[in-house]
Length: 298
Image 1 (cartoon, rainbow, N blue to C red):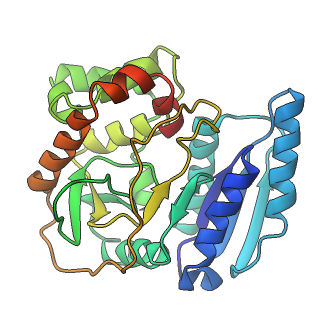
Image 2: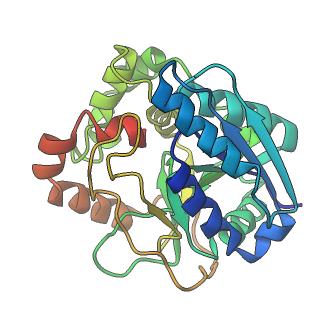
Image 3: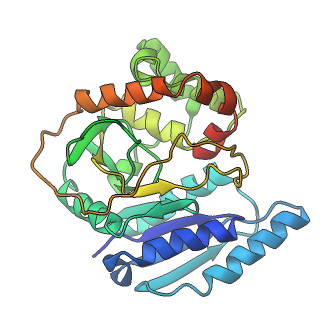
């Protein structure tokens, strides 16, 4: 049985339409259940109108084995919506594929995620799979592992999500006490510690920084594709907390990912390439966009 696809939606009718239309190009869509969780609107006319448009559209979705729609009355916000939604669905089905409403996908993404869920189901060192990889220079392995977890089109099992620690202060204390800030920040190339500090201080609600920290501190691995099967389209200023950025821009793979036997360990080579990519975006990304795009992406 294929993992259910859980799509989190809020108030972007054009984006969610593109996200769904891309998912429909996957051959496995017709054999997969799509569960759309629509967050409730904030109490302003614009939010109410856009959420209504989203809900009118999602009721027309076809092309999947089954469509389930969950409409929330109250606005929970992205972080709580994902935390609660993933917990409920993964506990029911045992595994899950998670999408947000601003992701275009390759026709091969569902096969990749489902195949990897099957392949690594019983390997406790693997916490999740993601369909996204940054636009890194040079060739990459077909698949590889990186310590931690990611948030753009990802999949996990009940055993993996059970390690999610919602208490950011507890995570931050452990990182500091073990003096892991440098590794956590990918050799200080990306301010993940600062993001976690901001979450603890209530400046951002971020679920994904806690997901990354939870996996990182348990030395768990996430499987990545060597070519991105996902494209982020939310950096256009349309998101609730999102600024304009090309940081996550990448090309979609026009070929499926080939699985090969690889060691279940972090790829130091790819981590170094990610570090270089993060550093190449400075100072423009962090100076111009910090405090806007990161709230949305995480």
